[in-house]
Image 1 (tube, rainbow, N blue to C red):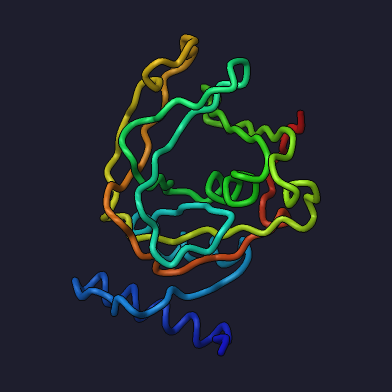
Image 2: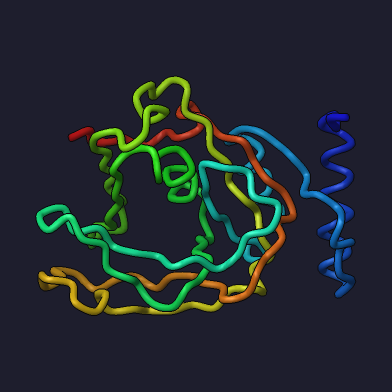
Length: 196
């Protein structure tokens, strides 16, 4: 049975109260399901530094560390990027972008020296990546305490020098259960995207 928005909010706030009190959530309890950018705005305003965000094209009730890679288009090779981990961000724009495009289309994001992020999307890699208007993804809201900040170099074997310093990243090396999962569409991503 689907929760209405008031039941979902009450369940989410109970979960946050429990984790702030040091009490673990029931491991069988599923995360609160919400939708849209307004839900992300409200969560970020209310819980700030206590939460982090992870984007995926699928709803995942328990996130587990996976091997991240960098793709090098000229060679067609992927290069492992650090130890297997769950990547997250303190903001939700990049996770929203990744939720919509990762695994469906070639995509990348890069921060400029002034802090603005450029988002680039290439050709579809799956049939579902063809129709931009039907894309749906999920931003997982996670307890920040599970994540450490890492500053990594380029992956071993990467064939080109990196022209900028990589910004610090949040990574967890243990499974993490979301407190909430927010369903997003392209309407929830307000930033310009360059399509190549």
